[in-house]
Amino acid sequence: MGKGTIYFQARFTPYPGTFNLEVEEEASLKKLKKVKEGRGIEILPMESGFCSARCYHVLVGDKIERAMVIPEVTGYPDSKLEIIAPCSIKDELKINDGDLVKVEIIVGKKE
Image (cartoon, rainbow, N blue to C red; front, side):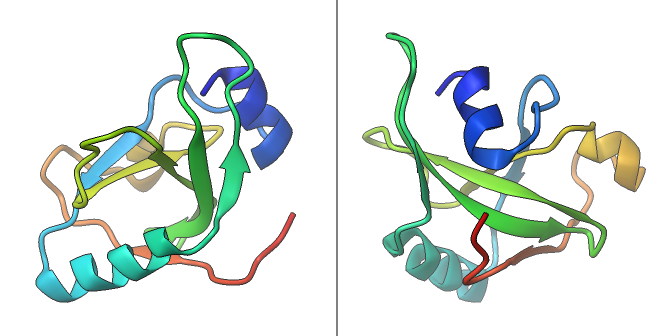
């Protein structure tokens, strides 16, 4: 993807790395699949070696409104979420690896 592309599309400079989540509930996996079938915000790579992706607006822990990134690569796990934010989500929400986190996908928001 590339940091410059994310800044241009998401309107913020992302904190290094992504906040990765594993969706385990079957009902949540079905909802996520429907969202992934939608268009999202297309992010095209600005440099070679990066992949295209789609972003969706999300609310993490009822507190942080940011972007869920779905890389467009073959074999990307259906149950994986990657979230970008301008801050460390773990620090902001005071959470640790393995903690449950609520993520709401905001449908219909445009920037």
